[in-house]
Image 1 (cartoon, one colour):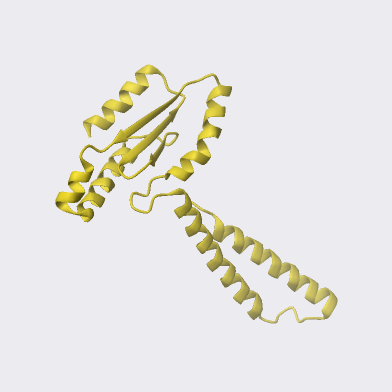
Image 2 (tube, helix red, strand yellow):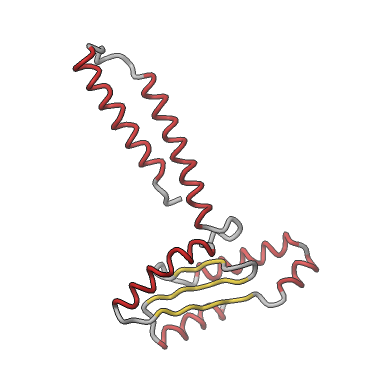
Length: 165
């Protein structure tokens, strides 16, 4: 995960432990070479809590099945993207894709196969888009691609790349 909760809380914990240690030595005659058992326990707890924060953050922005961004993330990020594109007087392109007959796949072959189909499609979409493009699972079998700073030629290339796969 690219989230930094563990790093942030570990840094805060380490800074707090060092500060408490310095204050303890200066004002309370605490022995400087005494092993910081309590500080180590607090540090481990903070690293664990940071990991839990990272996990919560990940699942609030990503779909658990496809590992793509989810609708909540798109709703949060879209106004910022739109404002950025408007400031630069550029275009923003939205592609909405729907899996044809997906209900039939689920009903005929079961939800496990349907999940594999969604994962396969999401891998294709993620593999054929660039870093500045937002790819998200919009609904059950619908996917959304947001492409900022695009021209007509690029739109056709994006569609062709995905259709070829």
